Length: 333
Length: 272
Image 1: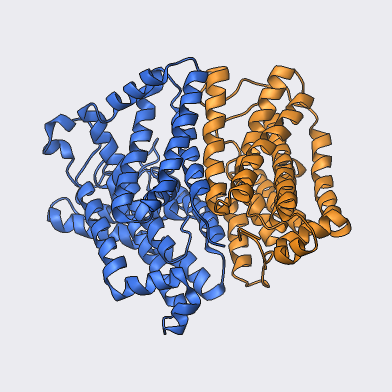
Image 2: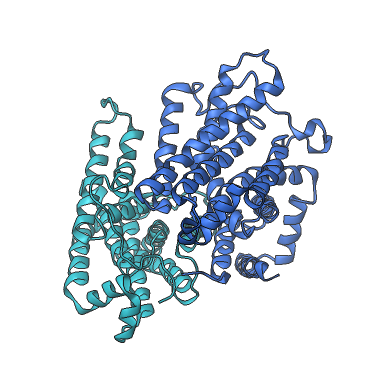
């Protein structure tokens, strides 16, 4: 399929570069790739870790992709993710221990979505009402938000000697190891279900609703959309807010499903990789989930091959893949 | 304060050139980091600051060249490419120090020196870029490439060529900014640029893509940072909020609250 050509090219370039790097440190690519597969899809713990990481990446990938469909670059997924995690962690602290579990989880997820939505609404509004370029504002606001959250935790909410808040009494989500014993010890948890639901719902929203139609119209041709009676500014703000909410929900993976508290810096670059996921996934929900799995595999695999090749090689390959896809994609002026 | 400002001045000077030619320079952060790493390697293997400076400039130029190749020759989206370059720079520098020095976070201590000279050059770079853009024929062609590339092409200006040169120049300058950082701190550490490249870009935007204004913005941001360091512990304002100042100011500038910040007309548009 023509749409897959850039992704395949990007992947091939990454493979070649990877081979060169592996050979450069005196190892055999075959050995390294075998170790990578064994460390990820080849064993239950590795697979579970891949699923865990892919969950967060699915959310951030969706967040970037949704905005892209409307013609907007959401580089702020990192901040939105962090805000979401923070809101979930902070709100969860308000819930007493005996609070009904399903309700607690839903409320915390809603809190996360709200936090992320705020993170998306600000650059969205700045773009729609003031014409501020959203690429720059989201990058700048990433820093502002991350600094702010760092201050909130370190100055007020942290457990002494740590950079995280107290653990939640309610609102936590079970690990997958509760259902699949082979996954014991891994961070994979039930939020993966939420991720899949989010992908399905986003797909329905974009392709089967009026709002989604307007979103795509604004993305393809704002002038034509305006002539058809759509108000681009409103669509943009709404889209960015929704995208932020998606990324925010990604924060629940860590906060509700893994550590059960909010930790400063938990986002760990997942927002940025979300850009790669959105591009590699051709902004299509299924593509995004597959791309999320791919990048998660790369990340987890980097750890697995550390004995042979520095895991930093995975970092390089992430950049190479994005660049490869960008180069191979046809750009519109 | 000049010590803090110098990396910003170099990088903002570079960013101004590239952006005025019409190429979005999100990769400045990456060029700077590559420059810092190059400088550490150069200083370590060469034994003195001079080889550090040269390798630093080369490191920045290398990553800028990748960006130029991808966006100008291959018409890749400039924003995506810039982000990729930053990710690539982080990964490549980590890989480099891992392979060469066995550490995952720092290089060994390297000799510094040449700080005074570099600080002076940093200021000079702003001056130089201003002169280049506004008073030379090259600068005129550069501005044409950034504002009306189609018109420029019709009068025989090779827009691709000029943009490529501008981007590589920005890489050299940002690389020098990074080199200063590394030499000043006597080592390279993982992600040591810590967003300074973005602050420099913010200075460029805040300065409305004009070299002197961008330079002034750099000094402003550096002053705030210096103030915060001096007041550490005693200030009522937490350090995180002071750190936010450059970013918030730029967002405000972009929102047009203090007058409109209008970019070069052809900025970010591929094809000419």
